[in-house]
Image (tube, rainbow over all chains, first blue to last red):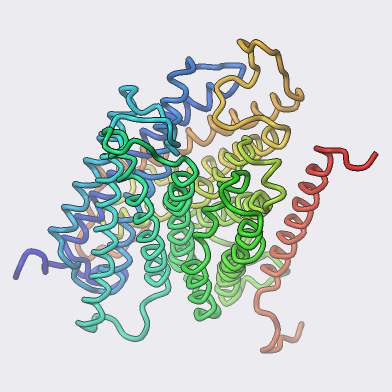
Length: 511
Length: 44
């Protein structure tokens, strides 16, 4: 049998797990964890600098490490994990062999080389351009090359996912429609293609500009197309995260959507409308007309918000229905109080859902309103918003899933199960404090991406409302808490993957 | 014993959570408009 057709049968799900798929999921997920470790260290250093009581780093290192934090967290950690998720959602869930495994390895190598190149450029001070790298700020050409290589690798990864879907359909490895999780991941992959195309459209000319082959780049056009990648990459996260919520609901309480067609329709709305959110970043720019901005933020964007509202109702609803079927019918909330809070996946899912919806979602819709954006734009409140969505939402969901992937796919028993159970609580509480602290300080005018909000060395003295220092301290306590939770996640997952007891082939134990 | 009908809403707890969510959204939306109105004094 050709090596790419070697598989084992999962004793828990009964699904075929192909060896090449397993290896590719393993390498992408482990690499993702390495990047979250780098990004987490940067989070600690940046967070302790924003806190005036500590003010840890000098200005140049602050902006350098903030650049590294954004790239390692928003792009490298999340997209490596998403590629692992795409291979899981296609090959494993559909019982299918993976399309072109060798090309999948090439995609991984391109992503890894690109990410390492970017980090080398940033840490050696050749790309102090922040995550957005707005022109006319210019980095070393190798920085842009690194991003392009990474994006091409990720794009190939999406192609492998679509190829695997086609193979599964042609070889009839599943019956009926694809599972909802795979459907959601397909929506994420479609959004990813748009995202990465925007990345290519803007980074290739920027790369040529950094080489001196193009003399002029329009900053307005750059910002428009950059956010087609910069923000849309977060929409991939949202879509993948929602898919994982459905998966965690099934894994933790055996929940199934009450009406799957509506859930699928909501994913379809994401494909059509969610990328319009990218233009939030231009609401205070003169580039687009007020008419365009209003149509974008007051009409079309709400169709993506509608999709999120559907998921926000569908997921707790499916959990409640599943729990009530088990007999937890007392009062309004016995289904919730008697839920498996002692399993890491459940609190991770609920915290992720709560932080994303109640904090990230509400602030996102409000700050994304054209008129209100005037007040919140470029304040720390915006940073609070996206920490609630991307970190409290996406990262926490990915963390919860990891504790199931390790025994299910990597066939290793978790080391430190008690830590794994406590970890989502600590990380979740930390992110809530971060989001609320940043939100409060930002609402009072504290700027984002700012080294010293006390303006100690400023020629013209300025001081904020004293409450800003209070909220900044809340955020700093949140950073310390979340970094502790993040370190627990890295520790448990790395130790388990490398040193966890190897599970027997027929061992049907999840946690 | 409470009588259950098939057409009862199957997730009343979720409904309450969603209503709390909507109330928070309305409050935060109102507050932001209020804060925006305080940035500039319009009129006298």
